Length: 376
Image 1: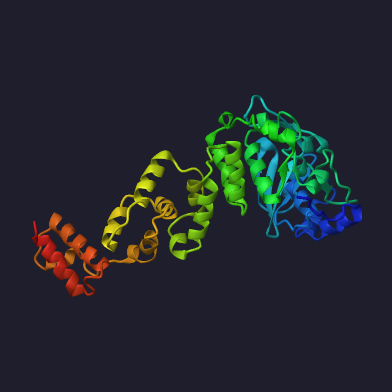
Image 2: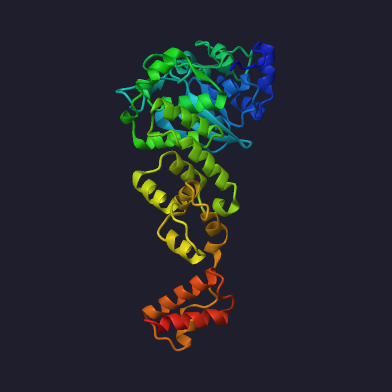
């Protein structure tokens, strides 16, 4: 891919920056505080996008800069960052910093630094650009990120990048899919050494969650499967596509959380995979049998069985699960049935008959339930 970028002379960049929502308010509130638009915000600006969220770097105290914006902020002191809402626009403010990693996969130790150091700590060249919020709009691009973006290339900044933070390999898949980028050859070699076992499972899950929330998730998963990362198999992309298709049906959408379903589709556990596969092979002859088969399964597991071939589960989701009785246990006891297991047996029989279309009225439910309760 060769990307068509907007002109990058200061005048054109200034016009593009001025057009971003929230920029005028940011300038007015920050006053003399020097700040730069950075990272993905600059990358997307060069691609002609109108980014909803803004990422700023300041030299100094990020919390103090966020306070100037006059809105309630959420500070993250360890990393010198703060998040603030300005007129409905989320602004992430970070202090320019350098990072060191005590050991592979560790969270970084940070200290204040200049803008150049801050850009040098980033993951890929296309995310290591900055644009001053005020004054002449000169693009800071020390690692030729603009040229890589134009060429459709994804390149890490230094040889130890994936060793410092192996989750960058997951980000590589996300950016490659979203922006239609190809790995630069040396970056591809370095990625082969990414060892996700040096970071916590929570960090891997969080990065995968961000990947799965994107439109290009299937394509990103195909890359991860090709690279042999994060336990993603070759079927993950197709499962995710199938989940999205099923969740377009309101019956499934109201049952299953999308993020949970996407995660399950991407990396199903072995136990759940076996149980779902067994259910997917079933073909109930009657609705009541189908309702019995789903007992004990979580909705997300039922969705996995559906995309594995159990088409009948669409009927369960749309109709069968909503079938209920007009009668209850008190009705049976008022009709003379003693409290005990027979009550449950009677209600189960009535519900099965209702599901299978054998009865349709309250009186018929009561008749079937009493008959079943009396049987041994």
